[in-house]
Image (cartoon, rainbow, N blue to C red; front, side, top):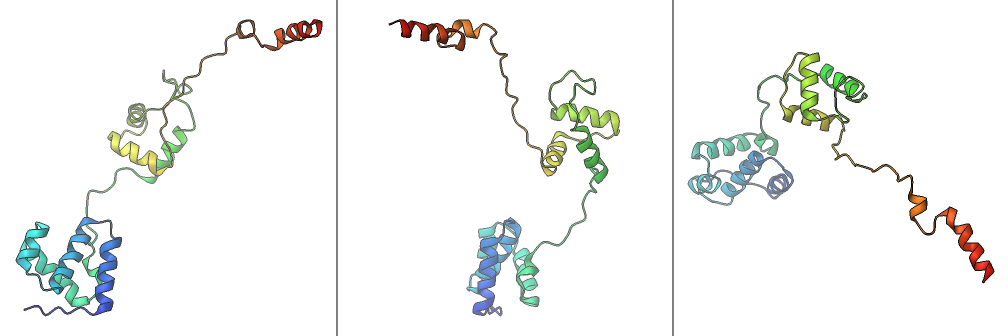
Length: 177
């Protein structure tokens, strides 16, 4: 019934892949192959992993043909082409070298909505806030809350008892004693 027999080395490679992978799909596939080799039924594996039996059979067949854990990895999938290009990244980097006030915007710091507006006006593309944040992170930019600093008090010296101006007076009092 179970024609997949794993050698110790192959089992170790699968167990290593199971520990090291960050992809849930690869984890499921690797676990399914390991459980199948231990004698668990396909129905049980499918119920545990909440997948179809056919999926489990495909994973076992894929591994059985090559005996390579990489056979369980995802293939590249064609998806929606990225609209954010390298030119957009260069443009964003050039934009962030200037403050919004220099460019005529009534803001002290760049915000994602402000960057979205400028990108839409200058490049003609509308990107969602997640895309802008992701590209800022890729560029190494970190968002930090602005720190508000009060202007120094011009009358601080008069208010503090040990100010340099009053220290000479205090020293003269001590000498007199």
